[in-house]
Image (cartoon, rainbow, N blue to C red; front, top):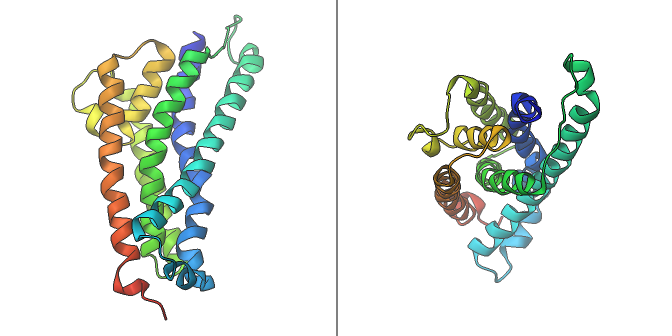
Length: 215
């Protein structure tokens, strides 16, 4: 019962906070630097463009994962002390260390994919307004599929593990209500990593493109 209670809303908030946690960092290290003019100075450094993009990616991913960790602790604490108000009979809400580590592992992989998306949007944007519009579209693309998760059934469906965001949230639910197959965890982590790499490559190409030339 405790796991089912957590699984009703926690996966949705995990995905959303991964976006919101890194949003301002992504705006700052991308289009923010272009508008301030500090991108020009950065591009004169001898570091390869791939290293610059990797540093910016980690700067976006770190606050996103930290936000998820704080949200996870706050969510469990809230349901633990507020479950008496939500159910007629007492329900024990707890999150064992092993379960929390699995959630954070999958959240980190999903955060990597979403952070790479945000960074690419920010690097390509010509203005802060354009970047914010791109982030809004990304938020809707994440939130709407997540709302459909309760209707998808088991994460054992073969196609689910290959759909970004949907696969991670389905695994979140599986971790909370039981033990999802190890293959689902592996395929989900692998597919998210496989999508993150080309996004970082696109970010590197964007940073090295003619629109980023030093003025």
